[in-house]
Length: 427
Image 1 (cartoon, rainbow, N blue to C red):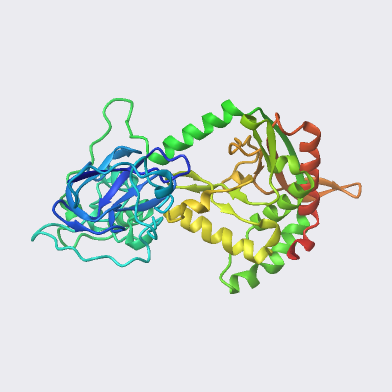
Image 2 (cartoon, helix red, strand yellow):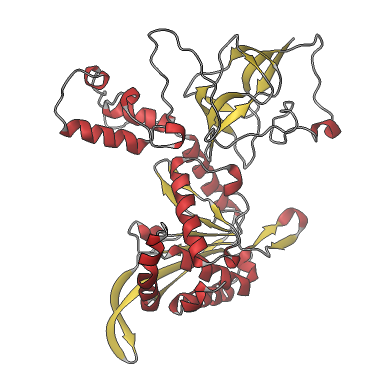
């Protein structure tokens, strides 16, 4: 009998995915758990495993196509004569839990966030066929726009995936090097120029999700923001004192670990900002943990990986984890679990250059802390005007949960910690 496997719901509100690369072809035999297709969602790039043993009869879609959750993905020919019914609830509990309405992978199988670290089965390619390059649709579109043959670009992403930065670097090198021989990039037709005054670019999965989440936040919460600035010369001196020591350990010491630590301590003193509203059950949920999301700017859009148990980690641990999470966020190699469970969010738009900003709450959280560009300006110290180092701070809260007085006290507590940072090296 034939069995149609639908694109499963892999959680975190994901509604669709883009086909990056098929791992199988029609006529191929597969076992339960074998990767069928590599998909890109708004958060991760992941392999989708086969839920059953069988032969691939049909593939629904090609590389670059968007597939909705619960839409057909692969048709398999499997053993057995009668159509299979949807598993009963008690049976389904023994199967993999992220699948769609009627598909389940076998017990003990996993859905990896990416295929990094897994062994690939070699597949024979037809004679004369060019190898298939691993790259996201965003990178492929960019290569086409600037006239680069993506086959010629060496990827630095997970498993050699070609990133947008790789294409730009290759393009820049090509412009400065003398042409020694004809290459595919040189013989390719130049990119088409945009006709008229508008250039159309398809929305990526991550951009669609950002749009949906921002709108949901604005429609579901009562945003209120307040602004302050704090003089942080002691923190600047402390970071400078330890910066080289951290570099010797391979860790980049930024200000963010200190800010996360200060935020966690301030949250412990003002628990309503570390909560969420559950209107369906008429209650507030206070979080007794401090998992803080950090907004990371990537070439594909803003993503928010989570740093867990900030209050329990030393500055060195936080610095190393932030560095690693930010790198993997830009490579799209984080797992879904690494985006889950944040109780609060910090966004550092000042790292790019902004002084002030009104951040949008990461719904259903109760607040988000925005940090502006650290800069020097005149300040009053002991009655005299001196040059100080100032950090702009903004706090946006859900005014249904958090009052203005609580917001001000939280910001005051946060500023007190970053003004006197020495004890933040202690757990």
